[in-house]
Image (cartoon, rainbow, N blue to C red; front, side, top):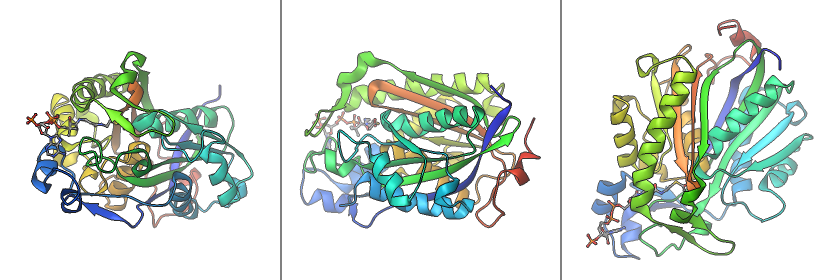
Length: 329
Ligand code: ACO
């Protein structure tokens, strides 16, 4: 193991056309805009004909362009999804070809925790000698739900987020993390081949809050930080009430917590990168800020990561070298 970390030098989000509002849903199922907003914080989501590979390609193009990378500059693609086009091959193969990448690529399936799992895995591979890794979280959840089932259809949406991670000397941005799964909870949220998604929403809710809080605390402990050091929290965007319950147990205000669920719905592996992109582009995260990502998903998986933001801006220059000097060694 070398003393190499990673810095995010490019990011991009893609939300397809096909906005479905709560009012649209109320026309086809027994629900109301008021019920959905009160119980979930969601007003609209996207349902698209584009598969996760096509959505991911659009997000990745923006991230690659920003990082100043050509296809040959990328050493690996990690593609987080739980709605892949095929059982085999992985959606990552489609994306690799579409983007003209010449590197290896694999899918990572950890449901809504998939992006954070991928980010952590990618840091490990940078540490082992890779130079640039493209990490994408992308979902077409509208394909794996019953669009008339008010239990699930109100929640899930489509979209993609991508980042380019570049190696730097020293610690880099990732200061601490926690990855976990409780496989005894598979039956509370699952999708069989060629079937729609089944969910025990109440049980997911109960376990999600517990898992997010304990995982966030473990990641903080490993980063040798406390919530007093954190500047911005990016929880998995499943339900505003879940985020509120989790951050209140961390003594953290919603004002400094991402809430893209309102317009995106739950986009599973795409939810955290889409929220990260939104906060970065809104200028909410500045050089040196500590960012806590925490999420949970089917499995039941959970994943948290604490990052110290290196200071890359969309308008700024390319490459990790300029920012590495600012980071702890
Ligand atoms: N519209 C109107 N009424 C509804 C709806 C709806 N869409 N859905 C349920 N109801 C009714 C119920 O029938 C029930 O009626 P009753 O009191 O007459 O029996 C009442 O509203 C309350 O239903 P609950 O199920 O108790 O509602 P709850 O507050 O638990 O909210 C929800 C349901 C939104 C699904 C919530 O449990 C939740 O968000 N759970 C977490 C789900 C989640 O995050 N899943 C994603 C996990 S991440 C991943 O890996 C993909």
